[in-house]
Image 1 (cartoon, one colour):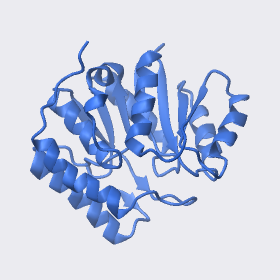
Image 2 (cartoon, one colour):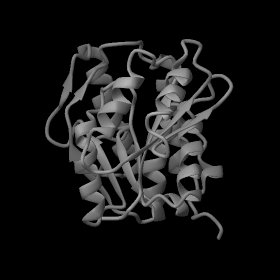
Image 3 (cartoon, one colour):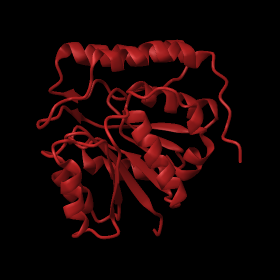
Image 4 (cartoon, one colour):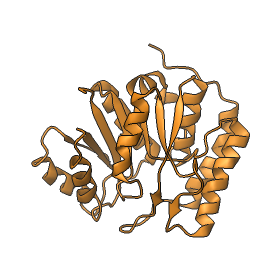
Length: 242
């Protein structure tokens, strides 16, 4: 197929992982391009990407931003790039191998078969999380249950950050109306797409906690997601004006 596929990877201090994740994605038979969005990593992550651009000219793209501006704004920057450059399928993926690049193919196939959004789901077939402390597993699992209760969505993994979107989906969502910047962004994007009538499919994955580098999760990020869901319930969701 001649469709264009872009994997968006936000980074902040991912020098231990970034080369390996790029090489892995580019090792597949399916042709993916990668867009790294780096928020001024002081560890030199962007420099590593620039060096790899010499090897992967035309396939590896980089946007550098000044300082940490939030996961949500990074992805929105990537989504705008993807729609402007007419990519057909746009993926979200972490740099730390907690999302297995091998699963990109399953997400892609789900969208090819009619899904508007394919979610790499930790909870659609039990609890498939490896190496997380039990407290974090419980927090994540019941956070999704809470979101389902408040919003009415049937999605099992509402905070999942491993996804594939069709271009039409992203072109319809009004990014100026997306408010949450941390992990609540993942909930807000799913809720927005759901309210706009898009088909969301969950694909089972196994989530493995990072081995290298440090997690960006903190209590303020979690708190934003919890309180932001209340506000979502009462917000009017409209498609972007053409």
